Length: 105
Image 1 (cartoon, helix red, strand yellow):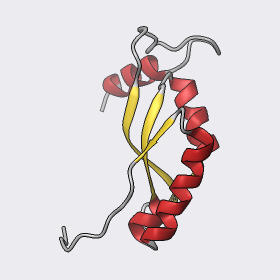
Image 2 (image 1 turned 180 degrees about the vertical axis):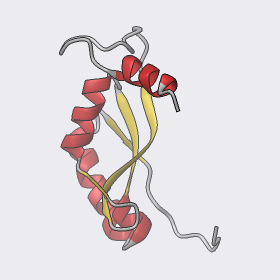
Image 3 (image 1 turned 45 degrees about the vertical axis):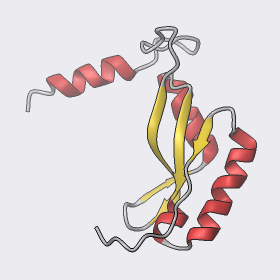
């Protein structure tokens, strides 16, 4: 692979300076699929402060967030953890809770 698309992604998402992002169009930018928490299944760990920092670095204004604990371990506990993060960062995060379903897909 020549790296062309990856070079373009890096160019677009790299901040120009601490006060400006290449994505700064004046429109609100919302990431609509973010996971918070940690899990061994996808080997990731992200807390609210880290996610806010990344969003600031690339110029995202808000995020739709769900908690990995609710998805992979204990639904109620994960939803409660999400609620605690929303109480602190409700101006930046929009939560979506995990609910039980009988689908296996």
